[in-house]
Length: 396
Image 1 (tube, one colour):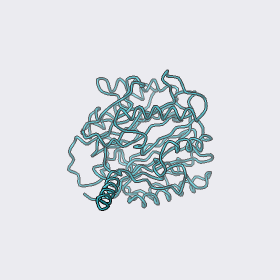
Image 2: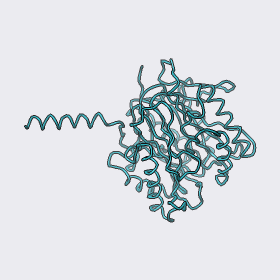
Image 3: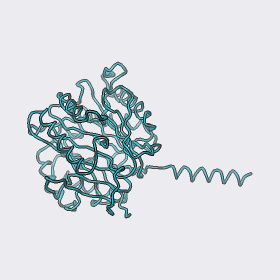
Image 4: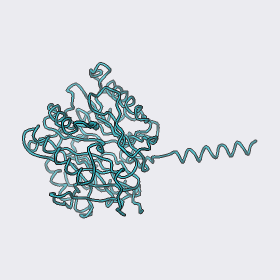
């Protein structure tokens, strides 16, 4: 009997290890979240940007605590529709109305998760899509029960016309850098979406393969203009989850990036990553127009800051040094970066990135990227934060 109990416990222990689909890299930078989360090649949920709307469509309360609670209720409800849940979240993209809310928000978010299982988190501060909201969040989570090769869209009905959740199937995926056209907002949005459509066609993909669209918009109060153009672009198709970030650029007024699945398109590439330049575009040594992941584990790295906010070069160097340490812990390196989002709030940091990126990136394989000038990067005095996705270095 004792032997049977021992074998049973051993089996349960092995099963528990086998079911562990994500590895959380404990943080030396923050007690409130992981430095990074490594996830197996599994189907992943990507969501809309959830605001603290209650069931009546009103912002829940005026305090951050109540609004954060409402946001997580909305997230939980949406994830349930896709067979996922709060415990499956591996990355949070958090948008707050002021950098002064960052520490409180991080503490409130940490309470939603089990010890040692807090996801990677990035923060950016600025005006949100609703003037009464103090926080909004979009998430990446594991949806391990999904076996299909097509993108799966679901929603609880609280977001009109747009899918709240899209499941990125296991297998190949693509990250398209932010693209931008000029003109007044509706014209620029339409032109940018047409450019993205041409990029999808170059990749052999269709609109139904798009998993999430993130738009950087000026002014944020006019996101309805961008939504209208997106709705027209996806006419006859599901509208994928949408995320909107306030952008301070005055020319152009909008930049749009996207994530798409390439799982249904067989690839004969032997490389773990392909760094691609569509026709009519010029390759850059500091960012790729498109990065395609063909296989391997994804690494979601929390938003990084310099140790001593204020001076551009030291901040940027600190951030890239921290990134190198985290990549090393995660079984990766600078040659296996996939997608960067650079949030900058100071001109010196924006120009400094152009100086420092060539020192760290392989010019033949830099990550896809978007660089957004924002009101604040989420930390007092700081001028830059970098949100990065990478893959564990593997061979086929």
